[in-house]
Image (tube, rainbow, N blue to C red; front, side, top):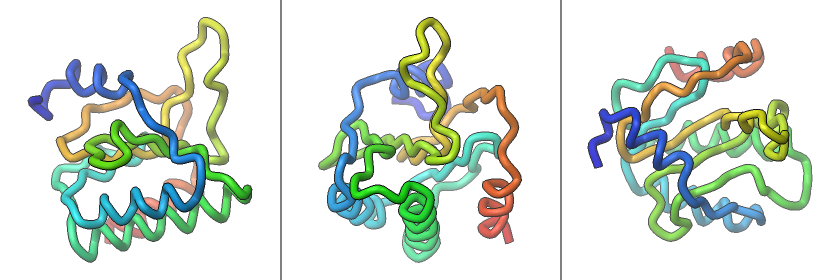
Amino acid sequence: MDGADPAAFHARLKGTFAGMLQWQQLDALWARVKSGTWYFYQLGEELPTAALNGDELARRIDALDALLRHDHDYNYCGIVYADNAEQPTLIKVYDPNHMGSSCSGNAAPSPPGWILSTTPPALIETHAPTPNNRRRWWQLFSN
């Protein structure tokens, strides 16, 4: 698949995903992700121009994991979805503070807060501004 093709990327984003229902499933997913090379995209921010790997990728994954566990203080996860749990290439992470509703009738479901992809992601339009706390969180990685 050509990562530069927005239509193909959006089609993949609408495909079938497996939910990480338990925190242990998310731990295993993060371990797989950390061994690869990924584009890390926070919706509402600029598209990433380079993929991450190694320490920088691990640092961002660990920070996102800490944020999710803090803000989604439940004994289950259920807010992270991968196209394939064992060999992921596309991951949607929903912001626990801004999930909206996935069963909102004819309205489009809320987009995820973050996308991790092994190919360059396409721009995803959001109709709500990025909350200041998330913008500040993302800027920690821009330095």
